Image (cartoon, rainbow, N blue to C red; front, side, top):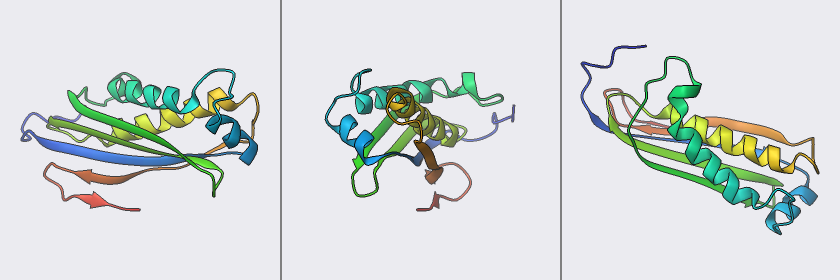
Length: 144
């Protein structure tokens, strides 16, 4: 692991985004709450939060962090036939939370896939990336 012992504790925040592309019929079933496994969007949101909290157990050499905030949004996008995912994670620590935000967004996407795969095996997880990072010694970072 990288030694972060000499770094200052600062407020760290990162936001990651991604999407699950699917057939319009699949999105309609999800939005209508008609998937056999239950409420896809709430389950994906919960899975993303749980994943962020366990990132250091999943990613080798990733520091365990005392997270102070996790928000995962799973928003249907009918025009593009997808579910857009935004995960924001915050902590007061010595290293950033980009991995936690990426893990939250990815696991939320995987959960959507798992819950809807019985009706649509052609879903695609797309565009998972960090879109914002603040805090720490390096400059803030933003991309869309």
